[in-house]
Image 1 (cartoon, one colour):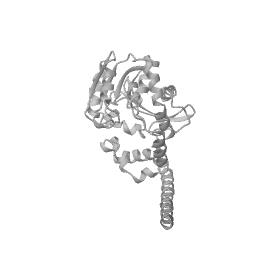
Image 2 (cartoon, one colour; image 1 turned 45 degrees about the horizontal axis):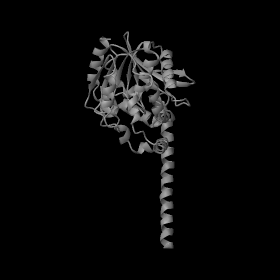
Image 3 (cartoon, helix red, strand yellow; image 1 turned 30 degrees about the vertical axis):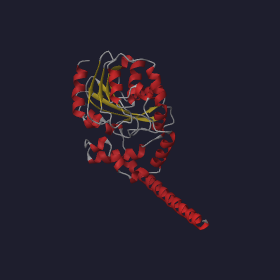
Image 4 (cartoon, helix red, strand yellow; image 1 turned 135 degrees about the horizontal axis):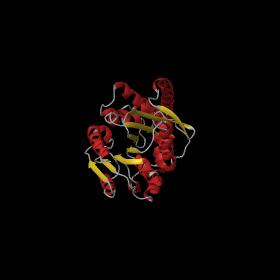
Length: 317
């Protein structure tokens, strides 16, 4: 028995040793690649100093109306993620993509992710980038909470909200968020560069899978994914989302026109996703919606329909 236990101990030590070697190799490889990849991370937009950290705002297009795109939680490269949609709208409108702290080309910073701080940083970044309200907001997923709060706090700045499968406060009463332990474990794996050994993760991203990006843009998306997966700002957003959503819920439904494009909900860990969003939009005075039988990143899976419907909706404002 003693011999068996001894051999098991040696086996466990051997496995632990192999794991430690793998982690060291992974981290070293990740560090080297991050440094080499800096050469291609040239922001396509403008960097502005907000709250003592650098934020990236990308703009293109022309027109009297500005459309502001707000990314969903954890989207590593918002400028590339939204490209399929905004490229179909920028001939008629000015578009602006705001990358929050810890996203895209923006810095990861030691700033609170409470809803007030997030909103004020977004507003300030747009102003410093030369954009002026009123805006038509295009929030995806978690940013639906920010868009609704924006309309509650500053109704004259929000002409309308066009939601891209947007979260509304009520969903976070039931939404099963990842545990702190799971987030710590996956975050550690990302910082150690372990995700680089599983390229299928990033290649399953809708922006890449739907082939709206050039080969060079796909490679850039991968670089930003490895740089930004589960930054501290992204994790803090998740930790505070229920609190932020509860605050928005107390303010009621803002009186601005809204159009929700709603996915089939099959990629989300919440039953009745469509029901939540339909119930909310039907309570909006000037609200309408369209159900799309596609996944959560609807702006990548059906950008033509969303662009066409958005133009019609904006023209009627």
